[in-house]
Amino acid sequence: MNNTVSPRRTDAAPITAAFSRSGIATAIATILLTIAMVSFKPFQPAATTVGDGGDIVNQLGFGSLGALSIFSLAAFANPRVVSALFSPAFLLMIGFLLLSAFNATDPDAAMRAASFTLIGILTMATVLAIPRDADAFSTVIAVAGLFVIGLSFAGLVIFPSDAMHTADSIEAEHAGLWRGVFSHKNIAGPVMACLSFGGLYLFRRGWKATGVLLFASAMVFMINTGSKTTAGLVPASILVVVVPSLFGMRLITPLLFALAMICTALATLGIVFIDPLKQLAAEHFPDLTYTGRTTLWEFVGEMIARRPWTGYGYNSFWGTDAVTSTAQPFDRAWDVRGIVHGHNGYLDIAVIMGLPAMFVAIWAFLIAPLRDYMRIPLRKENIFLGDLFMMILLFTALNSFLESFFFRRADPVWLFFVFSVIGLRLTARFPLKASNPD
Image 1 (cartoon, rainbow, N blue to C red):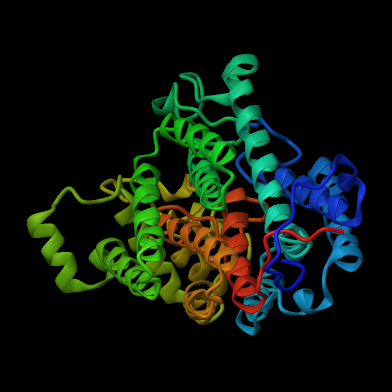
Image 2 (image 1 turned 135 degrees about the vertical axis):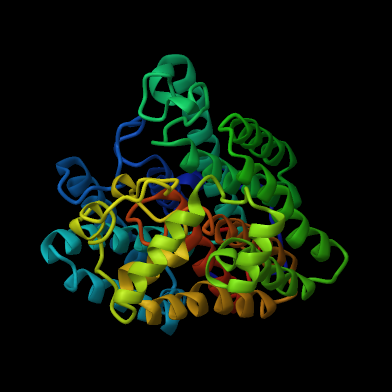
């Protein structure tokens, strides 16, 4: 996405092109995306947080990642692209993040954790900004995706007790489910879903063998994570985005996106906070609790009402005295004192940063990307790439109604969400060419 469009497509560049300026930029982007997914501590199922600010490995690793990203943007990216990376609303959300860190119970620790989040955002922005053209970007997706999937499959053979959930783990009910290089199946499943979208993108661009391989291997792994929500959202995301595009009706996609988000919000949070829907669910669907999440959301709603404007601060709610010191009613499905997040990303933004931040997030993360999608130039490469980002955005945005990953430092699901938001912004503003010979 580093240059403007050129209608001419050339034959494959020779091997020496790998050592050209464009080849180096592509290699760096591939490394950055791979590390963003794998992290510096793969096969660590015991980890309960992502990118702990007090871990020396992550401090050195992600510090180096941030430095490499800054260098790459300065050396390889088009200044016009760099200046367009973040919307004003996105920058405002970063402001809310920093404000919530200052508002934390331990500001120093919160700022260290927030720095990992900012490095993760910067890394994904770099992955998008430095590839020179669509072929370079496709190479990044193919190499990074197949490497991560291959490493995850290899882990099932070499490190089976680490690459899948076991009966002696904390969540014994997940025994036998795959997680690969990731810490949990609920991270592995969504990441594989996003990589399957990458495979579909490659296939549509004409990289048929590579696209099929990436799509099929990602789907096989995703299915074995046992995530029913992910398995249902993947085909839905493809249908909502790709099918209208095939028939030249791309403007239907934002409408379907908005409809899906509204319906999901009503079906999840609506049955907790809107009395008529709550009564309707109690009467006709008494067992609809999303495995106990509804009682958890009720608790979060009560806590938000106590601090609606500022929230409790970054890293200052779950696992802190604000939660652990609360009484546990005997009829509550989950013991909130041991929960690490609210299993709803939108509520977690509100409880950490306040309701104003949640409303800004809805604009920055959902409405603005939809507007960008509608503004994408009607050129083949832009359409294919825009559809990739929209599939990732739709999938992750819907998934966040049941899971929580917003601003979770280097969580790969959060990074793919950032990837889609920034990607849509760039795709709408810069015509993309297929290839660009040196």
